[in-house]
Amino acid sequence: MPTDALVIGGTRFIGRHLVEELLDHNYAVITFTRGETTSPFADDDRISAVHGDRTEREDLESARDAVDPDVVIDTCAYFPADVEAATEVFADVDAYVYVSSGSAYDVSGPAEASDVPMREGETPLMDCTPEQATNEDMETYGPRKAEGDRVVFQAAEEGVNALSVRPMLVYGPHDYTERFAYWTDRVAEYDEVVVPFDGGSLLHRVYVEDVASGLRVAAEEGDPGEAYNVADRNTFSLKQSLELAAAGLDTEVDIVEADRTELAAGDIEPADFPLYVPTPEIVATETLADLGWESTPPAEAVANAAISHREHGLDGTENGPEREAEEKVIAAVRERES
Image (tube, rainbow, N blue to C red; front, side, top):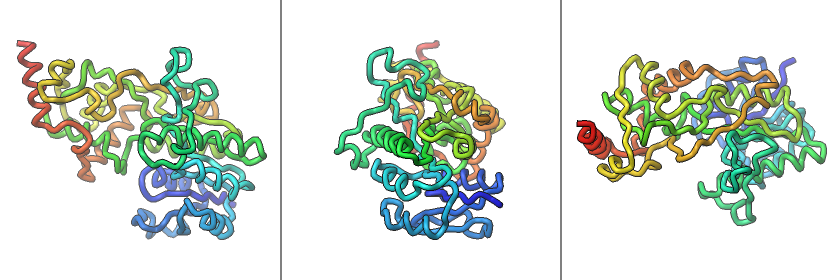
């Protein structure tokens, strides 16, 4: 008989791909959402749905009683209290998988505590104060995810089959953040595209379909109390991303490398560009790979993302510098080269 999987979330980005991944592997899938977002699976009779507020314990209990799931994958637990309630309500399932984040790692300490790559069980997690645990600002996102990990570890010590998966920055079709769409739009629309410095920014990313398969593999093969990083097995720089996007869109692009002075010509700071980081943010991925998980080749993943963004009219323009400012930078670079 198919395994019953309850996906908390399941209609937007990661959850949407997760549902498709589970269906492809013969799970009986039930989504648990508020029902406020139009479901892409509304006409798919293979999928059941229960509605409720995942921040309300009573709603989680009602979903558990209605579904009696074998596996629970929690894609939208943003506060430690949410994770605590879920590990208690679903204490008897075969696997409860908490979607954490690579942002849970604390890389602000001494060199020995912030080595590249970040590893499960070795790189420290962020601290989380009681005030941060209930604060929804983006500045507290990493601490909240880290505290959720600690809740999972404690639940596992108490006998719950709970584990954690930590995605790095996720990209791919249906990405409502449009961070990568900023770059695919630039590549598609212009012959020249500015990158800060040499474009070598290394922010480890992960293709959304690989997050979905990683969550499934972790649920099937992972150990309670463990955390599993999920990110592209072969990482690539920001500049390489643009080159892969151009190839996927069957176009060409001149990547213009600009230093801090040239960026200033457009009143741009390096951090104004999406997906730019001043120092590498890389995680080790062998722990999940040892369970049998594989990632999509970068050329295929980036092409799929770029084509999807263009087909759905996603341009991400609000995520980075305006084109007028970028053109001032290009002029400054060309003047320096002349």
